[in-house]
Amino acid sequence: MLDLLGLGSALFTDVCIAPEHPDQPAVYRKPNPRFINESVERHGLDRSQTWMVGDKGIDVEAGLNAGINVALVGAEPPSTGRHEPRYESLLAFAQAITQTSG
Image: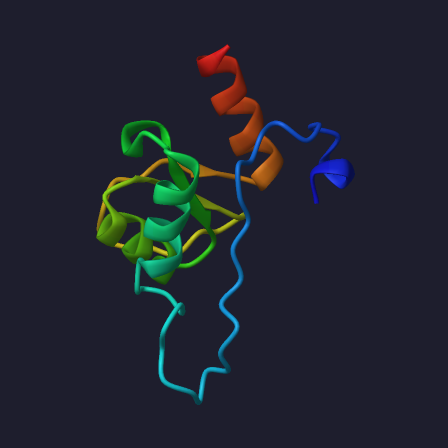
């Protein structure tokens, strides 16, 4: 994914995928923050500098449940009733945070 976006390998610390099927009991599936919390602990991340980026309201819920920053991406991101940052694409988000952090 990073190669396709031309962003190099240092932008994301981790990528997580829930292994269970939607019909199975949720262990890692959103909005459960388990996979986020495990990544934060594994990598010693500062929650104030950690982001959950997604294209659905459930992504926002997972990030908020983990106590990290959230952002929505997509041409028409869903309304969550909150005021999280919204970006047209993942690339637009990545460009925005790399400009503010470096």
